[in-house]
Length: 91
Image (cartoon, rainbow, N blue to C red; front, side, top):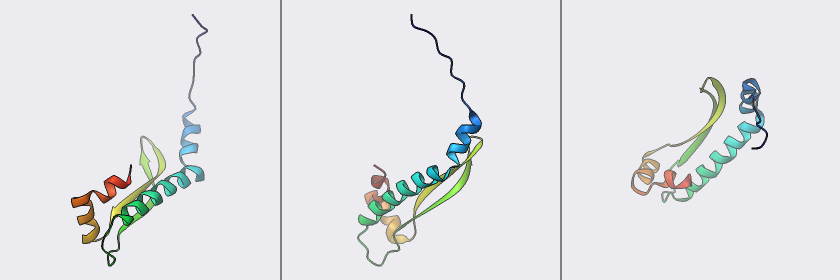
């Protein structure tokens, strides 16, 4: 059998990475892509469409950025309810 290796994770280091500008940028980029895809599926030019926001959220005992994409009006709600415009945009 090979040599056994023991790993010890640096929790403070992980928390620092999760709060970094790079992690924020990854969340913003992913959210922007999802928002664009969902809005492209919207067939109402008068709609405000889907919006995105990124904020720091406490999750799993650490603060980290999370991005949310959400409906803004009746047309975007219907697009999600009937055609899964936002759900499909995630994939």
